[in-house]
Amino acid sequence: MTKDLEFKGYWFLPNNPNDKIAGTLYYQLNKEIRLELIGGFENISAKNLPFESAEIIHGISQKAEEITLFNCNAYGSLNLSCGFPMTNFTCQFIIIGKHMSTINDEIFNKIVVNLSSLFDWHPQGMIKQLIQFSNDRDFFETQFSLSKSDYWEKEVSIDSNTKLKIHNISGFNQSFDKRETILTQDILCEIESVEKKSNFTDLLNKAGLFKQFLSFASLSSQEFLEIILFDNDNYQEFNDGCRNIHPITLYYINKDIKISDNKTSNFLFTYSDIEKIFPNIIKKWFDVKSEFAPIKNHLIESLKRKKVFTSLDFLIIVQALEGYHRRFVNKEIKLKRGESELTLRLADLISIYSDIDKICNTKINLTHVVKSRNYYVSIR
Image (cartoon, rainbow, N blue to C red; front, side, top):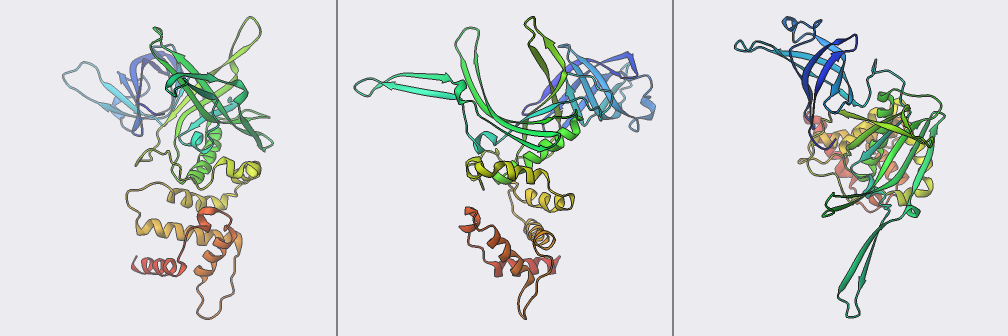
């Protein structure tokens, strides 16, 4: 999900596969998914556009890839000097590698995602570099190697049907003429449905929870660089009995505006900081009650990098912290004359999380925070 894509091919509705229309599918990063057809489907009249829609459109690309488009809304264009109409559809999701019947098909076993700062959060690589020098300390030789012994993974059972695993990968590619060699390494997150299969929206939502967790840890908005789905029944079997499960790629539009690249060393915490308690932390993160979701979303939203930090951003953070303390820490606080409820709640939160270095080392003037909150609330 890091570059624009284009798929030429034939497109049709699932209930009418014989009515194939030539066209091109455009995936424009952070902008739109658009299918442009030369003509239109028989049961979608151009006269009624832009009010027609198709829940699902199937396609076959020029590379023989099966493509499924979900939640497609049509709009047409008319050129009186042209003998045929052009029909366009905006779509919400693209599935590359499988034709699906509905968006709720429970056919997937696993989702694998690559996140923008996951390797920085836990830089556990498999590539080793060895530099040798001559006796006079001049540069002599350098060697690179990929070691399977450096493979690393951490697996956690989130619930009876969900298993989360983060692990490292490495790759080696060389051009045909051997002029160029590329070594790559990364950390991936896998979420697997153990007991029964899931639909892709459920798996994507769970991957989104881990993306939120990493956004919180990295103090920056994370993005999916790649999303791969796996259906264990969609495989190729070789003569030796080994099976190669075909990857199915998912694309959708992320409307978040990037101010700068997400990579940062300014982590609130890294994997090494919480290694011993990571299973408990990630289980609790996934087990957050629904009533806590709005507060958590406010806090995660406040971490996104912005060109300008506005008074509204400040109020959102303070309100989220105050609401969290009131609903999940201490509902009622007994006040003495002259005391501020907000001051006591914020002070209690600072005390509770004082073992976090960034909180412990940050000098927070609660008087200024409370006065600023009261001031901005009064002028709104």
